[in-house]
Length: 484
Ligand SMILES: Nc1nc2c(ncn2[C@@H]2O[C@H](COP(=O)(O)OP(=O)(O)OP(=O)(O)O)[C@@H](O)[C@H]2O)c(=O)[nH]1
Ligand SMILES: [Mg+2]
Image (cartoon, rainbow, N blue to C red; front, side, top):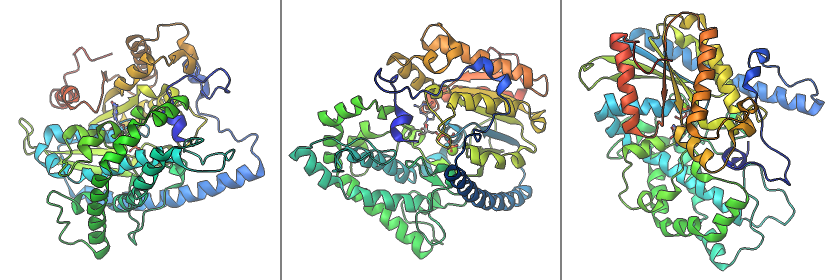
């Protein structure tokens, strides 16, 4: 999916064909299981699909192997509470995990914060190189590569100078991606098949040691290999380049022609995961240390399944071990979730309510909200989760609010919304009702459902929600106002 499509905030202009992939949520029942759009496939499309499936299978086998190893390790450990985080890609699962760490294991969270600078740097640099695609000198009439912007027709001397000054950031991007997601030879890992269209993502592969290698002090792990030590050095060099580019990044981002072009192309970068351009002055300054809020805003994709065991540092759970399972949410990764359903106490399902006007990165024909509903339905009806407490987080309400206020019409994408009011409260009530109905219809047991509206990048507000989840864990107190 192109970057432009993913972050477009506006309804299509009258003279352009509509891009919206619409959904009618009333039809949810008749559409399950979803029909694969294979009927009119050409030979070339078929070959392309088979190749993508072959690559996806290779990655899936690799993940299966990692899962087996992980399961073996898991059996050796005992935990007091097991929580699983589920939801589609970019729904905010890993961000919620980081909120758990910030609230319940603050010392470990702060010790790791320095390592997150590499991710924040990469997020920032990716936004800059994306903007640089506005300044490329492709011959007029040549369609821009997928995921890039249509370049400006004629750039003046000031933008030309910025293009030259910021060009080292392309190497910086490569080095940071290689550090965060290396293959066995220390190269940047190839993007898994289902991510290849995103272009914008860097994924953490299972077993990646980026945090250990760049923990506070930056000395690197004592057992670091030669290529890992070299990686740490490259990250430090990357930082120097970013600091040197600070003024030019500021100038590029503030440039009126750049802003106007983004506006004309309906690109709203501020809704992008890992958007840090508005904070360049602080982030690209020498000595920058990520704040907890920065760590929550950083974006790195999870591949496969990760188990995080938190040794609780806070009362009353002090000394307990809580296991939190964080999964990769793309469609190609969901088959790997099931082996982790054993012994789960609490399931936290993340549904990003802002995604109603977006499509899946792994399948551009599928509306993301629709996918969330189908996934929710599958999870609710899973018999292995019969005895698990369910918590639903309607996440990213801040982006939902901003989109609606900027004039995006919810009913343009969700036709069954009809002529209800286009404000946040009405949309949230509608979505809560839909999720609740599916739960009531498909849940495998009579347990209550706890629902919260969240903004996972707001640590203070999320802390209150986590306190409620802790209450559910300790007291089984289901009689509170957050029930549907
Ligand atoms: N504005 C805003 N951003 C959010 C919110 N929740 C998460 N994000 C951001 O959304 C991006 C994606 O979140 P992740 O937690 O990485 O998503 P995920 O579900 O783990 O995605 P996968 O690992 O791909 O399955 C990150 O940059 C987060 O900072 C929210 O409520 N509001
Ligand atoms: Mg994740």
